[in-house]
Image 1 (spheres, rainbow, N blue to C red):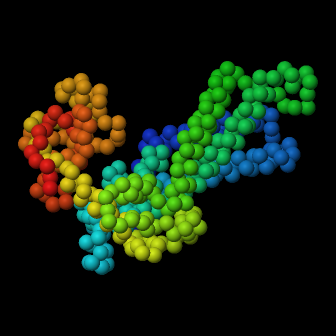
Image 2: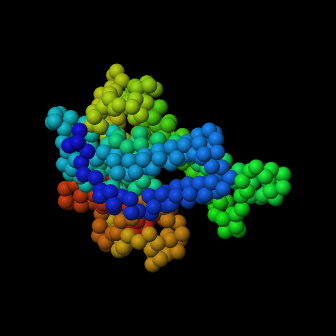
Length: 373
């Protein structure tokens, strides 16, 4: 299996990125603020219940950090560059990746941010600066779950601490057995800020957790869900059957317990094979090419996200996506596959084998040559 994983970006490069830095900063802020405020009125040695409370909180933070760093550093599993199947007959059923100069195994997709083909790719997560896929999906899900549970406990403890700080005079004159909580205006603002961060984690990370749990139960990644959706709406003579849903328990075992697959080959239901979904995707891409339009550039474009020189309408109506822009030179031929009012998405047509450049560019730069057949 180690030979199939391929190279992984340097751990230092992975972690020194705005996503992991922001995520770790949020964890640090909420964790230490909670410990600081809670320690003023609740000590671990007071009784059994405080001991359990601190033990549970430290356990949550340990699980959060372990699974976060595992998701970052272990990675999803990358298909080696230049990979080819053992059977030459399988090549006709597989997609070729020009960037990696190799074929994509079943359920693998190319990530333009990692610049590698990823095994069982779900999505590229900016917060771990890595893709989620075959090898790190379990770590990612446990990280999400523990982050939500830890945030809930933080909100409870911070809320109780603030209550004691607001009513410190009552505790001073009516219940002298309790420790008093004093906080400055700066500490108050920092505590409220930490509560806001924890609420944000519960909402945002909790929503992502629900999506990931659905993916596990269905054994269907976000990319595969999109392929299946298009398969259901495509005109066809037969009924499309998703091949990887082997039952809820079987699906859960693939992610949360010992894997029963290699990352290259996957168990499928009766009546399907390893390449059922891949063949469907190839057919969808063929239909997409048949709807495409070939255009020729009549102006140069640098690839800027806000090309002021092309007009203010183009600048303010840019595509709401992180997909790349491509620079074009007058005379370039581009195969357009998607379009908006002022922008087009397409692939530059080149004579060099397996070289692909795709992205958005202003619509006014090109004129149609003919519709691709």
